Length: 90
Length: 191
Ligand SMILES: [Zn+2]
Image (cartoon, rainbow over all chains, first blue to last red; front, side):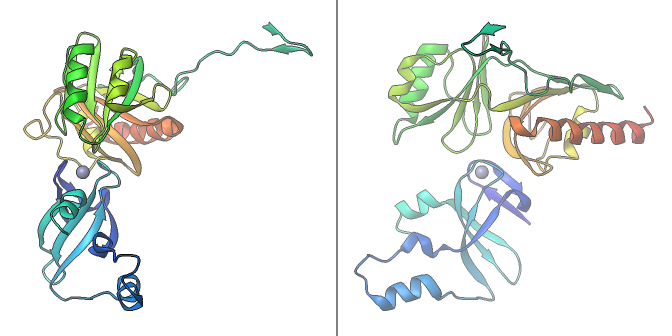
């Protein structure tokens, strides 16, 4: 598996650390209520298909990335810097 | 020796990270320690990347390199060193740079070695998961990657020469891993 880092180009999977679903970019407001916080902290989808995750280019440039990939085909569909994803509204 | 109140303190002498480990030469490939001079990490403040590049041009005559590249001029090199990070190598940093970036002295933080000779690329290719063909990684290209399991910075100096940097505390492991592979590449080539 290879991930194309927007800064470093196409790199081997071993350079990346997998963090999990990209929910950290849509953190609820402090007063959003228990249901929103419970969902944010505990509930995750487990899709067979397209998923959107946070990866860290740990052994590379150090950037956090949002990677869209297909869990069934292993295809990597889209990669962007987490800062860019956040700026454009996650 | 320096006299102190109660006794003597041996005068401290700086040791390079690979002191006593290098140089090595195996099968036409040599590994030697570089003496890069001052190394300074520059991390531009928010929105200051262009201003930092301008200040570098004024101070050192070379601008900030794009990701994956390095810039070189007389006795000064600037490496792209990761996301929003540059490494200035050679001179002490001009004080003005601190207006645009966090400026951190890294001079003693890195072991810096040079791997060169025909076959250097074959050695490195066994340790680093980066496309090292000249078409993809030309002289001047630089990459943050891993070397075996160490975080490293790799720069191609010429067709047959690479500069490799790892954290200073890993100097011995770096030399060990490179020596291992230099030996196996040489054995396979019958050199
Ligand atoms: Zn990267």
